[in-house]
Image (cartoon, rainbow over the protein chains, first blue to last red):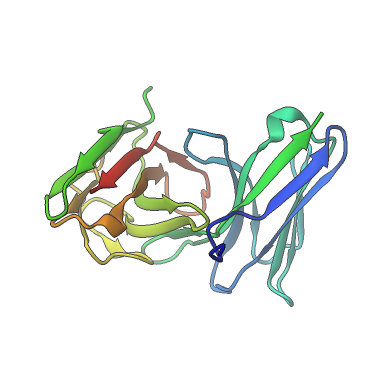
Length: 113
Length: 113
C-alpha cells in the first residue's frame, strides 16, 4: 500500500486564479516565519517573510498571513501564473543563538492552463 | 558572483565509504546551513553554523559531521555512509541577524548502495 509521507500535498489551480498555500507550524520560538519556493532541479529561493509579532505582510503578488493562536501560516498568490508552479516551503528562523533556520515538508503547486 | 557552490553535484558511494561534501559561498555571509531533502520529507536541517568557528546540531545530525573551515566554507562529512543517507543535500548561507533570506546551492545528489 501507499506509505504516508512519501508524497507532497498538492494544490492545483487554474491560471489566473488566486492560490492559498497553508502551513501548520509547531515551533513557536521562531522570530520570523518564511516562505520559500523550489523549482524543479533547483535550490529553494526566498519569497517573503513575516515577523512573529505581525499578522499580515504583502509583497509583489504575494501575501503572508500569520495566526499565532492556532499556529497557522498561509501564503496567498494573486493571479497565479504557470511560472508559479513549484514546491513551496514554510519555515521559521530563530535569530538568537545559532540562527536556526528550519523548514516544513512543502506543498506542490500545479498551475493548470 | 557565483553565490553558493556545492561539489560534487552527483556521487555514488558504497555502504561504509566516507566522503565530504563541499560548500563555499562568496557573499561574505556569516551563517551557513546543511539540509537534506527526501521525497515527502521536505528540507531537514542537519547542521548549521552562525559564524566561523561555531557549529550546531540541527534536526537530523546523526551520521554526519561538519567543519566551518573559514567564513567561506562549510563542509559536511559522512564517516561511514549508509543507504538511509541517500538524499539530495543542500547547502545554504545567509547574512545572519534579522535577514531571513538564505541562498541555496544547486544541491548534491548522493546515492549510497
